[in-house]
Length: 147
Image (cartoon, rainbow, N blue to C red; front, side, top):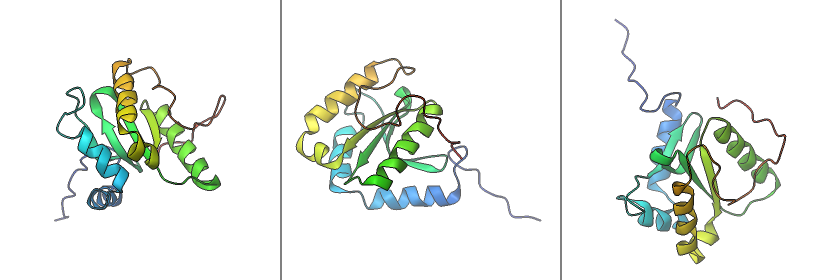
């Protein structure tokens, strides 16, 4: 009798991605810990947020299911990393997620402003893009497949 595989908690997410998400939850950056302290337990307008949430091949830093809003925090961004972040944003956007990006230092230095921008994005219709909060691929870019 073959061993029964446990169903993945998130459709399309591998066991490896789920394991990575658990590991990332245990070792958050100072900026992630600060933002999580403001988002957890429905503190921001009563909205539920998840941290290190697996979606397909990615782990989102923070995710608000009701608004389908992904929040990504970036450290020092250099050429290749900026390209990967832009590709990731494009793939998630093409899959229907709204993506906001903040630099770690912005969260540490201006948390109230970051929270206000997140509030503004939550108030927008789920089909509309969030307020400009980071880099994207620009017009005409075609995102690669999510998996």
